[in-house]
Amino acid sequence: MSGFKAIIDLVKTSTDKFIPRGGLSGKLKGKLSVNPEELIDAFGYGMLRNSLPALRVALGIAKPEVGIKLCEEFNDKVCMDLVLAVKGNSVVVKQLREWVINAFNNSLKGFGFDVESLINEFRGLVSGLDGGSLVQLIAPSNSMARLALMLHALISGNKELAKAHALIGAVSVAEKLLRRLFLEAYKECCDLKSESFRLAIARLFFLHV
Image (tube, rainbow, N blue to C red; front, side, top):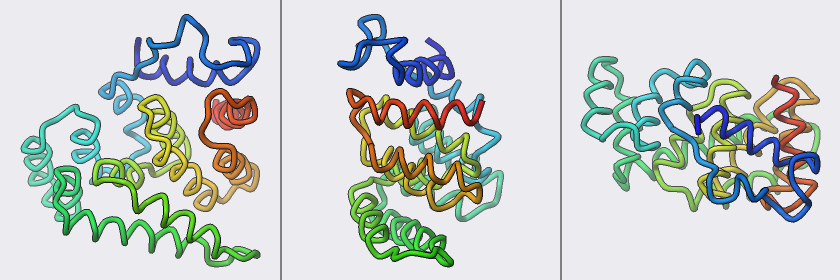
């Protein structure tokens, strides 16, 4: 099953038209998978360029030494640090985690409500993510790429990463409807047996297509 088709099939499970209310259909259960190479091919245009080598390593497409070689071609220290984070360098992972948290906090400036609870919730989510998940969290440069990686996280069973993607989406986009839909997905995340969560994912998907 291709990566893009797997993501579409996951969204299809968000409506009662495709499955009964209990969860994944028998046809998809145990078979839903994403080819990471196809995921990069389909959505790489919406990823930060200097994150792609580390993202390939995080998704198991490339070995760390290949990612480092690609970063050397870019002559980009940030690119190199991201690969080191995926490899599990504790110092770099800690720095990347704090950078992600600070970037999230800065994105909340100008919001017209108390954001302290969101800051605390995001910090709690990010504190449990490893270097590979942190790279997936910062890689998207647009909402479609973020939605794709969010769905990939769900398929992979990484609910904390999926929820963090949804929360970043809710505060990083300018369009009010898109912001509301990401926030809805965040609040309902991440039980695929939940009708409200499946519908939230479906609304996000159909807004992008």
